[in-house]
Image (cartoon, rainbow, N blue to C red):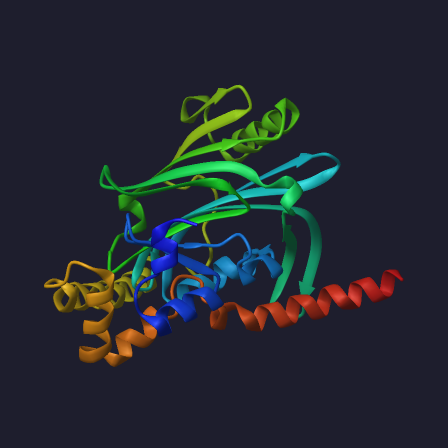
Length: 286
C-alpha cells in the first residue's frame, strides 16, 4: 500500500468517515476517490439516483451508454460536475438490468454493479476550462475522483476517458451504444479493444430535476461554500492543516466535508426500497 493511503488525511474522524462511506484520500493530487469495496456497490444504479442528485445539492452532467453483450444488458455511465463542496468525475460499469417499479416514486431499469470478473481497465483526466484538475486510472467498476473546495459549473468540465473492453465483441457493442446515444465518429477513437472519448457537453437527456433556475440557486450555494472553504484554508499547505482549520472555524462546514460526494445518508433510503423490491421479486420467482 502506498504511503499516502497509510497516512490518510491526518484527521482521525475524517479518515474513519471516508472509509465508512467507501473512499480513500490521494495526497499527491489532493483528491478523494472511491474504493473497490465501497458500500455503493451494493445498491447498483437506477435513474432515480440521478434525479435525486440536484435536490441534494449535486449539479452534475450524466451520460449513460447502453448496450448488449453476452446476452445481458449493460450500461457504462459517466458523470461530472459539482457535488456540493467538491468538483468530481465518475465512470461506472453496470449490468443485468431488471425492471424496477416503485409505486409513486420510480419506474425504469435497475442495474447491478459488475462483479470482480468484469472489472474494466479505465482512466480519465478531469479538466476545467482546459486545465487538468486530476487524473484517475485503475481496473474498477466505479472509478472516481473528487476535489474538495473546488467550485465548477458542469459546462466548464471535460473528462478525457479511456476504457478497455473485454474483447472485440464487447468493444463493438459499446461503440454501438455510443453511436446510438448520439456520439458521432469524430468524438471517439478505437485502438484494439480500447475506446477513447471526450465527455464534455452531454448528448443524452439530463435529469428532469436539472433546470436552469434551480441549478443557478443550488450552484450559488455551492460556490459560496467553496469560497468560504478557500478563504479559511488558504494559509495551509496540507490537508491536515486545512481540515483542522475548518473544524475550528466552521464546524457546520466540517460536518459537510465528512459527507463527501455521494455519501451514504443520501442513498440509503433508496437502498431499502430497491432491496425490498428485489427480494419480493425473487420470492415471486421461487
